[in-house]
Length: 207
Length: 207
DNA sequence: CGATACCTTGAGCTGGTTCAATTCGCGTGG
DNA sequence: CCACGCGAATTGAACCAGCTCAAGGTATCG
Image (cartoon, rainbow over all chains, first blue to last red):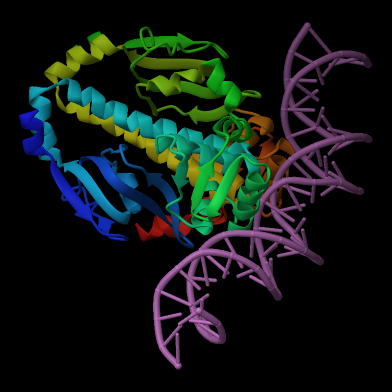
C-alpha cells in the first residue's frame, strides 16, 4: 500500500482544463476521485462529446488510435494517476496488477459495446432512458442524479438532436418516472421503469 | 519461435461451427489464418451480427461481459490459438508479449469506437460506404472484396434494414464506385471515392 | 423444373430532424 | 426590487431519410 501511494499522484484540474493524453506525459492509468471527465472525439465536422467518466471510474491506457480525442475536466476534478514507469515498478512487485489493467480496458470495451447497441438498435425514447439509467447507476443510484452536460451534448452521445432529447426527458417527467427541478438535476422516481424503458431489462434479468 | 509453436495450436472449424468462449476452455488469444469469424450479440429480441473478423486479424481475451456473444465460423476457418496457461508460459519468457496483449484489446476498443461513430453520426449512405471501405482495407484491398454475410446481416451491423443496405449498394454500383458481379462479390473500382463517401476521409488525411 | 434463399425495387408511413418561435433560469445593472 | 439580456431548454410544425410492407427478380441446387 505504501508502495502504491508512492507511485500514484493526485492531480487537480479546473473546469474545461484538458487532461494530457500524450503517451509520454499522460497518466497511464487513473482513478477519478471527484468531478467528471468528458472525452471529445474530433470528427470531420468539429468536436463531439463521446463519453463521460464519473467518480470511482478508471482511465485506462490508450492505444495509439485513441489519442485523437480530447479529455477534459467538467468542474473541479481530483484524479489519482500513475505514469507508465510507475506502473511498471509496482507491477513488478504485484504481478496481478497487470491482469487488472487488462480488465480495465476490457471494461471500456464492454462499455463501448453497450453504446454500440444503444446507437444501433434503440429508438429515441430507449436511448434517453438508457443514458439516464446508466448515469444514475454509475453515480451510485443517488436520489438526485446530476447531468454534467447540456441537452446538445447528451444528444451527441446518443446520436440524437437536442430537441429530441428534451422531448424524451420531458415525456419521462410527465410519465412520473423522473422529476426535473432543474434541467440538469434529475430526481429519479422510478429507476425500475427507467430500466424497462431502456429496452435491456430482460437481458439484465436473464444473466 | 520454437517455444511459440509449442504453445499455439491450429484449430479448424467448419461453417457455422461455434468457437468456444468459456474463459476456462476458450482460446485466450487467437490469430485468424483463413476464413471469417462472426460475433453475434444476444439481445432481448434475438441474436444479431455484431462484428466480423477477417484473416490476419486477432482474437483477444474477453472480459466477463463480453462472453455473452457467440463467436462462430463462416465457411472453413483456420485459427491459431493459445490458451491462458500457454500464454502465461511464453509471456514469462517474453515479457513484451504482455504489452502486445494490451495493444490487442486496445485495437478492439478503437474498432468499437469507429462503429460508435458510424452508428451515431453517419447516414445510410456513409454507413454502407464505411463498411465496404473498411472491409476492403481489412481484406488487404483486393480487386474483388468478398462479403461473407448477407444484406440483412450487413444491416444488423450498421443499424440499417436489409432494404436500405441494398439500395445504397446499388446506388454505389450505379455511380460507378463499385461493380457487383454477384451480390456478395464487390469489385471496388474507386476506393478513394468509397472513402470520401464514408465521411471520414478528412480525419484520415489530417493524421 | 421446382424449391429455396436471398436480393431488388416500389409505395406509403413515421420517428426524428429541422427550423422557428417562445419560455425559463439566472446573472447584471439601473 | 425590477427590467433586461443571454444562454439553454422547451415546444410547435413541416419535412424527409429510412422503415415497413409488398411484389417481383435471380442464383443455386436437387
